[in-house]
Image 1 (cartoon, rainbow, N blue to C red):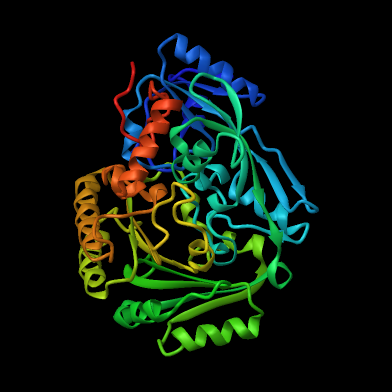
Image 2 (image 1 turned 135 degrees about the vertical axis):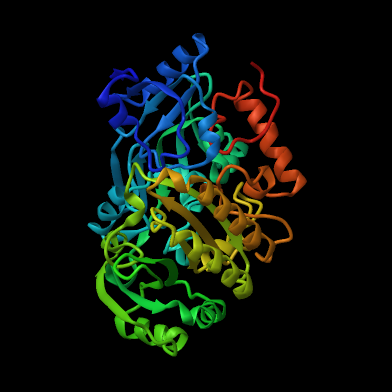
Length: 453
């Protein structure tokens, strides 16, 4: 299917999660089979056209805006999910979302690491590393990839695994968007903990307790079966900033409640929602217990992330003061900050040199979302975001800026996204030159090389 830019249907098909980092798309083609991807790539190469793969179109990096007159290859039609309970694997098509995979595994008593937002593409999240609530047990999403079917920059289809093109397999797990379009991938799966049930609670706090909260989060050496995500946002009813703590555990309810009380029980809260749910249902409650805010498209958002080894309360309070000023402006009430504390036990069991993901020493992931509804707030959103990034990076515990690549704004630089080790950078560049010398796949946080045009 092909739609041109003057079509309402075209606009609907190409709409993105963020309206502020929009690639220039002039044609949209939905594939009928995985083989169609190679056909489109070869056509684009022969006609000097840029291409961009699309599934859920959730990425927000500013590098996407460099795309010109591109063909979007829509792989959202590749929805196959095959679970092998004997081999403990799941094979998924390139168009599958997080929200597709979780219930398929729940139905057969299995689990694996997934992202926390149902609407995000499963493969897209994995290729940047893939944080999630089960990473304390099973590592990152990328750590669970066994093999992929990759369509390369020439349109060739290859299988990539630890025995087939192992160097490329290394690169795909952390920098995968740079090397081709994955139409299918196979992942490890596991028996679901606690019968597939999770305890979840969302508690609302006054921000006067922010210092206590971050002290508690720093002191919480997150066990393998737990996660604690703190959402700082404006209460739409009172126009007052609040903290919402989303706490999830695969432990039995009584054990989980006792763990929560031991870490956060001394902090008074305003209100609470709690439940015991099938693990595939937890994402749908969102970080506030009222739904998944991260799945709304068409919004104006400027977003960036920071990796930390410890939350610096002084720096966070400074950023919060600036946040309050911005979020109080008309049309800026959608802005928020999210502090994600997942268990790192499973992540740090993996050899840090075994994949391209560089930041296994991180213990916290910060997401800053300068959301706004009024275009008049655009410059102020930029100012707050860049000030917040500078303060948070300077206090992150890493000697230089570091961040989860999927959360990058696109301005942080190669090292911040992919690591500063010389061997790591050289390996990525060498593989990019080998597999994509013409920079066919260089519109989302690209590995910098001298492209052969």
